[in-house]
Amino acid sequence: MLHLERLTKTYRTGETALSEVSLDVPEGQIMGLIGPSGAGKSTLIRCINRLVEPSAGKVMLGAVDLVALGKGDLRRQRRRIGMIFQEYALVERLTVMENVLSGRLGYVPFWRSFLRRYTPADIARAYRLLDRVGLIDHADKRADALSGGQRQRVGIARALAQEPELLLVDEPTASLDPKTSRQIMRLLTEICAERNLPAIVNIHDVPLAQQFMQRIVGLRAGRVVFDGPPEALTESALTEIYGAEDWNAMRQGDGEQAEAEADAKARLEALAR
Image (cartoon, rainbow, N blue to C red):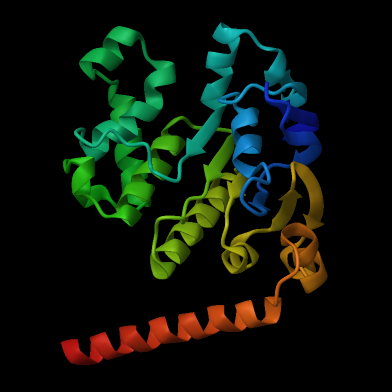
């Protein structure tokens, strides 16, 4: 379980990005983190694994307070946290397999990682993960030869190569088209269910969050203003998170876009026959 207790981040400028955020994320739960730009979503995720240093509070991963750790202990504890980035963060000149194996860097001596000499067990694990994310036939391709959706799948496999106890996912669909976004979210939720793996997903697409998340937390100005199941995300709750907006019109627009995409796909399939 992940337990956040009064987690706060204040920058030297005096700006408070997070203000006493307290949350529990139990095993197996996929939590969507939503809110306007600047609400503190990415800061929250990065404070958990201390890519951003919290100003106060606790981050308990099981019995370990990550905030209290020194550099050496933190490096070891970070093995327990898989991170999936919006911009993939792949080494583009390396192959898909090499990128996935980089998820084992926290477990191998420096000389092995420098020479790219991974153990047979690590290599076998990487092949299994590539098969799971649907990229087994692309193992030897360079990362820069892949589509956006394929790169995100590599990022997922790399994070899972750590054998993490928690996944942190930062806007995984922001650079993807609607169909690929749904495929990636479906893959993430299936994998978390298979492994009973908790995840926090920073996501800007509210309908996508409602479709795939088990729980949604809304941030505004660094504070939690909503915490509940997707069906409780009413117009008034959305207004509390984002401010006034015609939410019915937005949802109607999302539905029309989905229908247009389906029609376009049907026309293309008809032409291909």
